[in-house]
Image 1 (tube, rainbow, N blue to C red):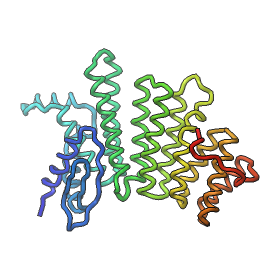
Image 2: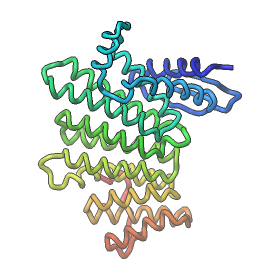
Image 3: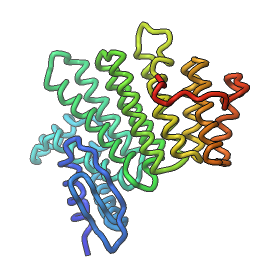
Image 4: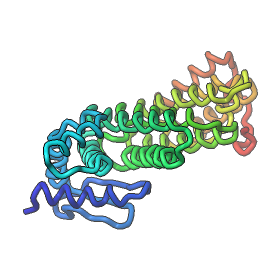
Length: 325
């Protein structure tokens, strides 16, 4: 029998040595556990995760510093009381790992998620107050990149709830927005970022079908990135064009996924190019007819798109997919 403390220590070691790598975490059946690791692939039984969570939660809530950014004042009070001085950075790192274990067990744990937001906000504020401090800048960038990779680990792992967690998707959006505000980014980088995020969303859509929260995240991110594309009145269109092909390919591979089709409809609305819209709807219609598809989701997309874009002959012509923007 493993103890909660040993379960927490073993899982905490994995998170502490992650080094911004993206992990693939899976819940194992009891006969295969309790904890297996092969490089970035992690397997853990539900019981072992519960044990680690119990210890992580106890550590996380035992000290007021886990709910406050008064790290320096807390440390000074300990010193004044005659106790051994505690490095606040080390203490925050311990709480950070605890919050990761908590979120692995409960992806909707708002206290743990908000604590991570608060710590990042504190680092951002520290950077804004001292622009010339290169050390603070590097610490901030490293923390933001680590947060994004952690969210990718949760959202792209075959876990029961994480891939469809509104808390995690909104947290990822918040972190990316903070990263964008800290630097000037050209149009090419914005397009690449949108395509990279789409790949993550599509992976989450494969793991959890009809993933409304993932595709809603993509809509929100598309709007945010368009705001950063300064000097362009057609930024929504410019960002939407490169992802048409990828989106339609995924939807045709998952024709029963209504969330994917509705996102495809959103992308076509942003493109504002009648030729592209006609070609996309014609291709989807011909695909459905060729394989005899009768599912509701695909034909709902065709019907809504034909009405929205005033197309009377959706199967009239098909352009090779390679000719998409």
